[in-house]
Image 1: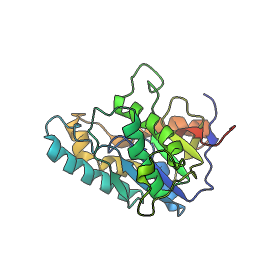
Image 2: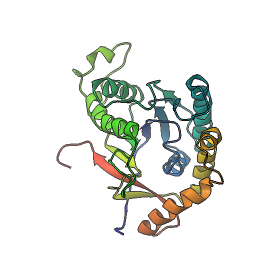
Image 3: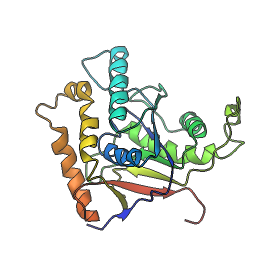
Image 4: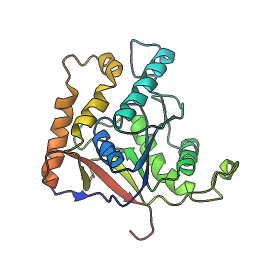
Amino acid sequence: MEPLDSLREDWERALCVVAHPDDLEFGAAAAVARWTGQGKRVVYCMVTSGEAGIDGLHPDECRRVREAEQVESARIVGVDTVDFLGLPDGVLEYGVALRAAIAEVVRRHRPDIVVTGNFRETWGGRNLNQADHIAVGRAVVDAVRDAGNRWVFAEQLTDGLEPWGGVREVWASGSPEATHGVDTTETFDAGVSSLAAHAAYIDGLGWEGWDPREFLEGFGRQAGQRMGVAFAATFEVLPMGWGE
């Protein structure tokens, strides 16, 4: 397997935008713990509340459970701000409305880096990606550019909100096209605890005997081998500048 380049860490603020509670915990949370440990500011944004994710719970109850689990999961890795946009789980569509919702969050938090999940059609084999993941990731890339244009979604620019064109790169966690990685050896345990915090969701999936540590170790060790470390997380890097 090809070696992974190290992600840049010369930044101060990151915004993580994903479709569901738990999306970041399936691989990226240990990297977040590394960054918050360096004193960087990281904010989470969940486009949905994952309310359609547990078959045995009505969406209204599921929403409360999953939001609470995500807030605790974020706390474990040093993130104290979690935005929930409240869009409907399972039926997200790429388009102008989704771009606008994400652009507003980018303008509000003004990050240097935006992190999202894999939005390619597969995970690198025959396992198909989920529709919400694809829609959100595609919208994130476009919304980051929208956020810097004063004349796109101009109705958002009230009460002191201004355009923000300062995002250097978008990083897609777990992408099959990943070329970069983060050494998560020192923060791997925090990543495991962050995933384990989604206990109700994991129980609701019916994965009897499933071990979050064992799951994350498989991917983390494989990525680590590509960086010459024990554990790592992988990312596809999408530069937001011209000519890069």
